[in-house]
Image (cartoon, rainbow, N blue to C red; front, side, top):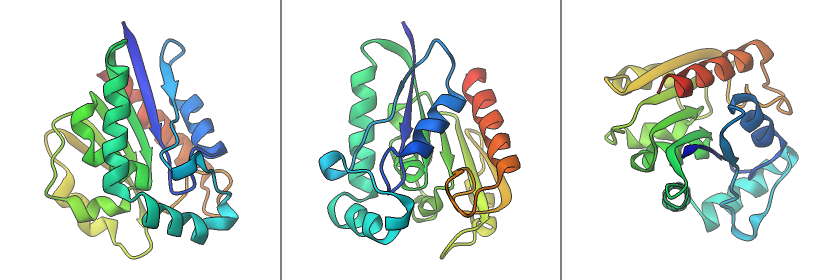
Length: 188
């Protein structure tokens, strides 16, 4: 039995960024999946952010994505003794909500986690936030999230800093997140 890593996408679907991050974090012996939870398996380019947002919020939503993510993880349990999740943005918030289905989760700029601070994952969780989030002040939220199973890292960056296709990309911070995620997943 082996380890499976599920990479949960942003509103854009499993685009090149998600594929790159899956490869950057994976261990050679792991099974990696980047499922598409968007209706019709659509993938949006960054230039269509507003359209992707409308599609995500109008036809899926974070709670439904969390349910689909947990179902996907359950399907992996038959062949894997460890199931991990790396989520970005809405995928990070979905991972936070679906944490019971995983052995460890890393949530990268899941700013909507602020809406679910009462939820406490039992599995080890690493939360990675950008200091500059639209409509949110992560610095005010992180203190209430850290705890026995939850570690928090806050970067002086903007939402999307791990995505090399984003105008907010920060190569040094992105590399640091990859190292942190690897360490976190490999320690469990």
